[in-house]
Length: 298
Image (cartoon, rainbow, N blue to C red; front, top):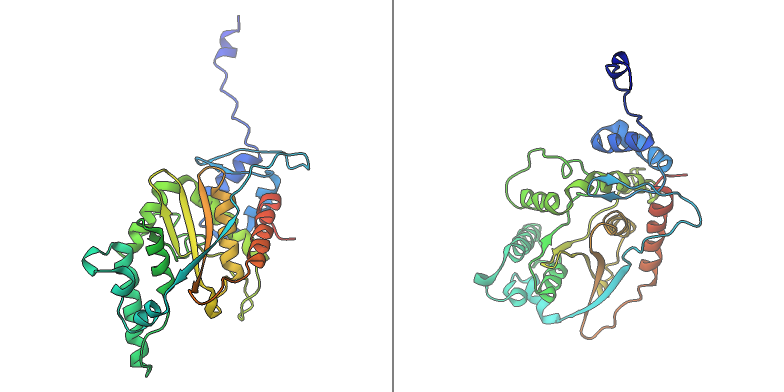
């Protein structure tokens, strides 16, 4: 039987290993120090995933099993040229139908297109342009309520924490992010910031940052579709930062959630869809960087 003195000895503090340090660092993801140190610490931790806010350590060896991640889906979608011309003229009902049946996304896109068209007319243009037309066509083809997700939520601390946002759509979007991915958002942001070091430089000499797709559909069955929309027949191609953003979503969220990342390539009925090999190759390259190096730059 242990002596009385031994029973009253203070308990030894638990060991705090590298995983603890990396976890603590992610809880401080809003600081400049954490952004600078995270890729190195993540590398030391081995490959890790956010599963309900926890880390699961894996040995980073050639023999390690790799959990399948969602691949990039390229979806060809046709549109009518008459709908595009009506959109430029401000006739948004040509795409969405009667305004009394519009949902929040339809109203948001129509409002953005209307304000852009009015600005162009003030600048001397005769009509609007094709901006937001692709998102409108994609939303209509999906047939379910989507969220407009073209915000900087992958890299901005504003979307991870609970800092005050202007009321309205942005607040609703952040609430939806926290409801579905709350424990994982800090990991997503940290990995996206690390991956930015692999992206091309801007004219100002800074690295581009991964950006989120245009649309997010949280389906009733619990799955999530993230969709980037491009008018491919009009020279609208997906950028490196957009492919990197989709790679971050697929890699960081794909192990704990049913996630798909998709590119809707819109083309007129008279045109053929564009080749998508480059998009797939670049997407896979960014996914491999995230899986094997924790987005650490070399």
